[in-house]
Length: 383
Image (cartoon, rainbow, N blue to C red; front, side, top):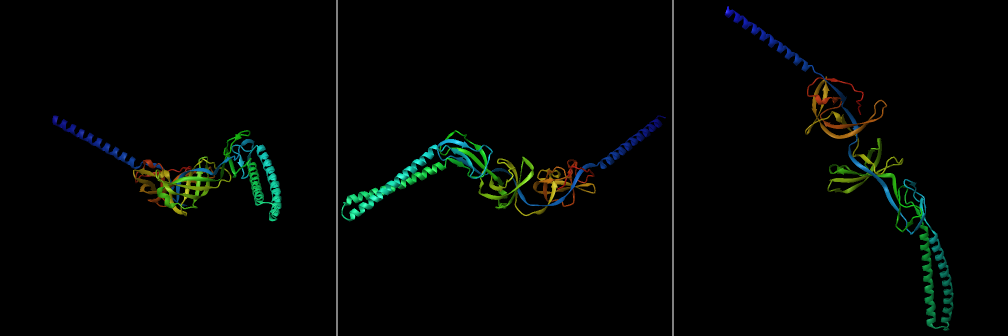
């Protein structure tokens, strides 16, 4: 009886163990099935080819095309000041005037001295003519004739001196009025009416802001791409939705030894005066003709050390692709008449082709050969 009991107990334990193992196996299969059926939500965009011009990007600064310090050329008290900070001026416009009283009197004195010198020369010429006749007849000595000849030369010299003095006096009088040497805007007024100024004292600082100069630097590796006359496009932080254009007109002949960069300058038209000197600018320097390039949103790129990859979706299954990235650029996007948005894109030199669906959101949790569910997002825009 005891043996039968032990045998029955053994069968029961064996049966229980088998049931437990069977249940565990079923549970494991169920979990495996659940893992295989897990689907990740992603957003995708079609890979597109866009015709763009090759370019170099840089950060630059806008500066006045010309900046002139207007100074007085004579001493005196400023009688009138006709411009203030920010005043628009034209070339030849009267900016200020020095009191002309002393200079007008100097002109009158010089004119009187000139008349006196002319009269003296006229009398001396008559005297010379009389004594010349007497000397020919032997009625006066050689010394007397030489004296009148010397007197005539001195009178002629006095007349020239008087003319010169009058010319200088008139010139000084003409400088009591201070005119603008160029068309532009008064950057700074340095004096006020009633101030005493000396010759060379700065009165105004005037800047020309149409056109403007754009100064920027280019890295050593891109120097060979620069050519005079290349097109420039720029945006400024104050007007992010507007683009301004110009031409490259100066290329520095040497590199900065510390930064290994080359300075360049472009001329930017500014007829509406929207741009201001001192603005920082995002610069695009176009270095060639348009060409077709593959573009993907910058958000689709995944960086792993020195490698860059993206995920594309084929039949709802992900495929990992290693890509070679070229230049990055910002493109203005317009969606259904809404306010334009700027999105950053990357050029793909190799690794994917036009028409493939690249994952732009949700790729952080992806791996190769994963099933995904494509979610539409109205905010996603394409160039």
